[in-house]
Amino acid sequence: MNAFRSAIQLGRDGKLFLSENAVLRYLNFSALYLAQGAPEGITFYAIPAWLAMNGKTPTEIATYVGVVGIPWSFKILIAPVMDRFTILSMGRKRPWVIFGQLCLIISFLVIGLIPDPLNNLSGLMIAGFFISFFGAFQDVATDGMAVELVPEHQQARANGLMWGSKVIGVALTLAGGTALINTLGFSTAIPFMSVAFAFFILIPLGFRERPGEKLLPWTKGKASQISKSIQLKSWKKILKNLFKVFILPSSLFLAPSICFNGLLNGFMDTLLPIYTIQELGWTNTSYSQLYSVVTVVSGLFGMFVGGYLVDFYGEKKMLSIYLTSFIASLFLMTSLSAFWGYTTIIFSFILIVTQLSVFISIGYFASAMQLSFKRVAATQFTLYMAISNMGRAYGSDLVGTLKETFSWDQIFMLIALSPAISLVTMLFINFKKHKVAIYKLDLITN
Image 1: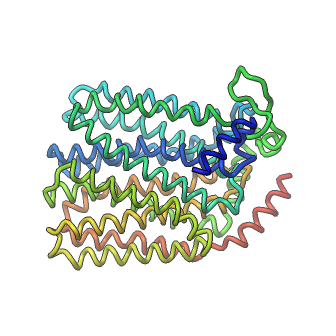
Image 2: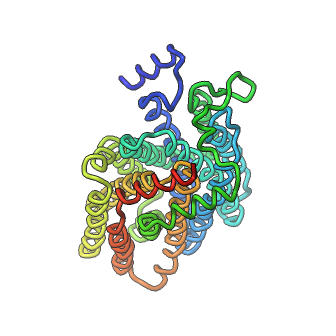
Image 3: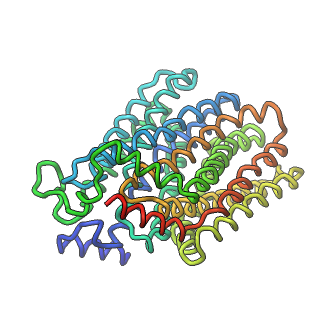
C-alpha cells in the first residue's frame, strides 16, 4: 500500500521516470511481467489441459506445446533489432514494449477465430505461435529495459518481484481461461480475455524511462544523453561487443546451465497436465484450479522471499540449493509411486517443484542481468533467455517420445538429469571476474 501511495505522490510531483525512483521501477516491471503471464497461461497451460481433457494424445499435446514454444527461441533475432533501432526520444525500449502489447491484443483476437480448434491443431498451433511470438517480443523489450534501468544492488529483488508477478499472471490466466473455456467455449473465451488483457497497455503509456523524454511520439521531449551514450548505431558494433562479452568464461558456463534448466521447465510444463489428467483421471478444471493455487503461492513467495534470498546469500549458493532440492524432489516422487493415487502426495509434489522452479528462475534471471553488458543488454540477456527457451521447447516436445518408451516413474528419474547438469555447469561462474572483464571492455569500447 505504501508503494502505491509513493507512486501517486510521484505522479503529483510529475516525476514519472523509471530511472529516478525504485518504487516506480518495481511497480512498472512487476505489472509488465504480470501481463506477460497472460499469453503463457493460455498457450502453455490452459490449452494443453483443455486438449488433454478432450482426449488428445500426449504426442499431439507435446507437439502443440513445442511449436508454440519455438518463438521464445527466436528472441535472439529480435533483440539486436531493438538494440539497433528505436524511437530514442521515447526511450531505448519503451516504444518496443508498447508495440509488442498492441500486437499481442490482436493475436489474442485472431486465435478466437479458428474454426473447430479441437480438430484443427494446425490452425491452433499457428495462432498460438503468433501469440508466443509477440509475447516473446514484449518480453525482450521489458528485459532490456530492466537491465538498463535497474541498479545492480536492486536486481535480485526486482527479479523476485518480476518473476513472481509473471507466475501469478500465469496462474490467474490459467484459472480464468479454463473456467471461461468450459463455460463459454473456446472461440468466445479467448477473445473475451484479450479485452481484459488490453488494459495492460496503459502501463508503458504512463511512465517514461528517463527525464526529458517524450511520453508519446507527438508530445514534447527529446532523447536523454545517457540513452545516446549507450546506443550503438551499427550492426558491426553490436555483434562485436556481444561476441566479446559472451566468450568470457562465466558467460560460456551460464549458457548450458540455463539451457538445461529450460529443458527441465519444458518437461514439467507439458508433463503435469498429461500426467494428472490422463494418468490420474483428473479433469482440466481440477488441474487448473490446483495449479493456479500453487503458482499463486509460489509467485507470492518468489516476490517477497525469492529475490531477498538471492540478494542476501548470492546467486550461486541459492541456485545450488534449489537445483539440489529439485533433484531430490524428483527422486522422492519416484519412490512414492505406490501412493500416487493420494491427492495430497500429488499436490505436495506440484507445490514443491513449482516453488523451486520460481526460485530457480529468479536466480538465473539475476545471474544473467549481472553478466550483461549494458551496451548490448537486450541482445545479451535475450541470448541467455533464448538458450533457455530452446531447451524448454525441446523438453516439451520430448515428453511425447519419452512417454511412448518409458513408464512415468522412469520419466521422473530421467528428468532429474537436467537440473543435475545445470548444477554442475553453474558452479564454474565467477561474477567478480566477469565484472572486471566488462569494465575493461567498456573502456575499450569508449
